[in-house]
Each structure stands twice: as C-alpha cells, then as structure tokens.
Amino acid sequence: MIGNPPLVPNPGATEPSTGAATSDYMDFEVLSEPWSRYQLSDGTMLRLRFLLQKLRRGFGVPGQPGLQAANISAQTIVVSEAPQNLRGNPGRPIPQEEFDRHVEEEVSFRPVSTGPSIYRFEGTRVLTVDYAPTRVRRLDANGPDGDRQYVVETAASVSVVTLPPVLPSPAMARAGTPPSPAEGSPIGVD
Image (tube, rainbow, N blue to C red):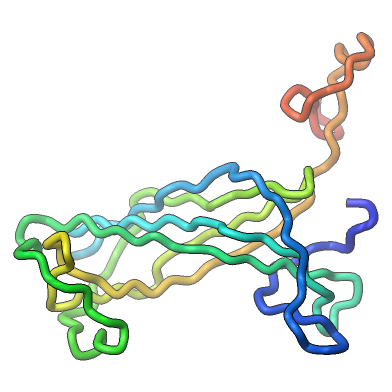
C-alpha cells in the first residue's frame, strides 16, 4: 500500500531508539476463523481455533530496512471431545506447573479438517495464520466437564500478503460504475 512499508509478522517489535514496545492498533475484518479438528490415537477428537484479538503496526524490523512489524495478540481455544471410556467424574483443572506430574501418556494425532484463520486489514492486506498441534499429552485427571485433560503444544505459521487492487469488470467500466470490492476483479482477471 502506498505510503506504508511492507508489513511482516514480528511479535515484540520495538522502537529503535528506546527499545520500548510501541505500535498503532489497526482495524481488521475476520474472513475465516475455522475449527481445525484432529483425531487422537486414544479416540478423542481435538478441536483448535485461533482467534485474533488485536493487530498492531509496530516499528521497523531490526536489520531489515523498509520492513515494518505487525504485532498480534491472539487466543487459541482447545476443546477435547473424549470417548466414553475416557470420561468420568468431573475433576479440577490441573495447574500448568503440575502438568509433568500428571502426564499419563503422549498420544499421536492426525488431521481430520484444518484451515487457516484469515484476516483483512488496510483494505488489501491479508494476514493468514495456520495453527496446528505439535505434541499432545493426556493427563491422568478429568476436567470440570468429566472429559480427560490434555496438554497441547502448538506452532503457528504466519504470513502477510498484499492483494492486487480491484479493477472494474469491462461491463462496469463501460457503464462508468465504480466497482465494489465484491464486484471488481483483480488485475488481469476478467
């Protein structure tokens, strides 16, 4: 976008002269925040959802002149749907500092359905976040809903792209009607 340097994901970008975290909040539109589903080897269905809460423009990226950082604040929702044999009486959530003492076993998983969370900002910029588990461990205790509890470690792949400007379709151009983003077509597409 004219007047703005390229934007790259960079949590923790800092203002060069002071080192203080500084940025401007940006509005964004949610295009997609799907549930990704993973089948665990013990029969449990694990669902993950990445939710963007804040998007901020930061200062430059150290060592990369002309690039500007995007700082994101997000939340991940993790839900387990355990089979009957892994359900029981409701229990208490295990505090994070006690996870290692309660690990029953590491479980393998396979994707059932996955999809990235996608957000549009500044009109033509798109932020895409692919989020997936890297390790899943079942604990030896049930949660408040009676389902077995899991420790889920995750990783994210984040990208930012700028879409081409939208041009009117030939019919709209002949009629002199300005296009809406939904009615126009990207450059070279008709």
